[in-house]
Amino acid sequence: MSNSIQKTKLQEVETDKKILENPKYTCALGGALSVITNIHRAIPIINSGIGCGMNQMLNYRVAGGEQGMGYIGGLSIPSTNLSERDVVFGGEARLREEIRSTIDLIDGDFYFVANGCIAGMIGDDVEGVVSEFSEEPTPVLYVNSSGFLGNTYFGYEAVFEAAVEQQLVKSLPKEKGLVNILGFVPYQDIFWRGNLREIRRLLNKIGLRTNQVIGDFSGLEGLKKLSAAEYTIVVSPWVGRKTARLLKKKFDIPYINFPNIPVGPRDSSEFLRVIGERLGISRSRIEKVVAKEEREAYEDLNIIGDVSSRFSASLPFAVVSGSATAVGITRFLTNEAGFTPKIVIINDNPPADTREGILDRLKGLGDKDTVAETGGISPKVIFEIDSYKIHEHLRNTYFRVLFASSQERYEAENKRQIHLSVTFPAENRVVVRDTYTGYGGGISLIEDFLSKFVRP
Image (tube, rainbow, N blue to C red; front, top):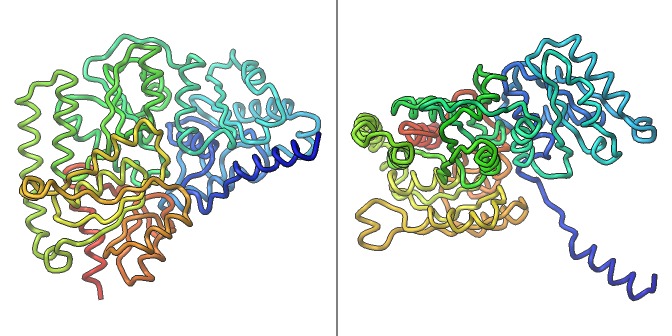
């Protein structure tokens, strides 16, 4: 190779190199495990190097709101613990041994082999080894979740894709009123349990039944029933959309993208009306539910109004989070609580074709009078995944409250302002049932951050 060509190649490498400081997610393996460990009686088998399972457990257990990890999770997860010997001579025999011993020793409804980076790089026929167990009474599946393939969101979708493509999910007759719920990634969304419960409660109110697969007791049957739903509801601008499209292609199930987590009365009512219209639910039934829920929620907002106006009239705030949470929180605080959004930093790297829709949801915000008189408030919106750059943007922005991850709390502390962790990583709070979703979710949000104002 000539010196000039070699120099050009080195320049290309340097141009492509990007160092990401304090990423806001883990790898594809982490995303896959976050799903598998929260499908009831699903048994994950990690096919990766020593330490991958421990690393993922610590990431999610600590930084995901100190949450536990399901029926077989944490230190209980079986692993091949591939070593140097397996890299040199291949790890297929070790994987075969681990699957056999796991089936013999751990009681589960199905088993899911999740690849890590080492298994993905050495070229083992993992799918072939898994196929050797096709005659087992309990299904054994395989997901290619090598960490280098993508991040948490990639791993989340990969599990559902594997279940469909490996024909665990087969065509079933459609069940009237059954809907799939996608978009809530366990631990990556620290409120995922509470969010799913509230979405289920709201949809039950208008006569629908939810198939959420993760976080309930449906387990294997819930996964199989993905094909029986009338609709798939994706509560995110983009997370879960790939799976929804696959279900549409394979089983002709239409899907709805609701672009953000509905926080507070206004967006919750919009959510129910959109779903009701698409699924042909009578308008009178929807409005009856909306009227009752709004009455209770606005009464609660009225109760908290005195302390809110005393401590935080027109409160300037900043948000750093994934798109669905960031948009939901910003819309509620601006539209219904009367606060002023200064900057919204979207840190989940949404695809280019979804960004215009996200920006539209953050334009012209405020109550009806404000929008009519001034055109509303439009905060500065930045798409950024690098923590260094996120901190730079926050240092140059005035705010009184910061809704972000625990990594950003120092920016609020340096300004002597309030910080509340609302997204991963959240190492400074414990979350089990908490949620900011739904009619009462906005009240919970205000309670949490105003409590920091009124404490001594």
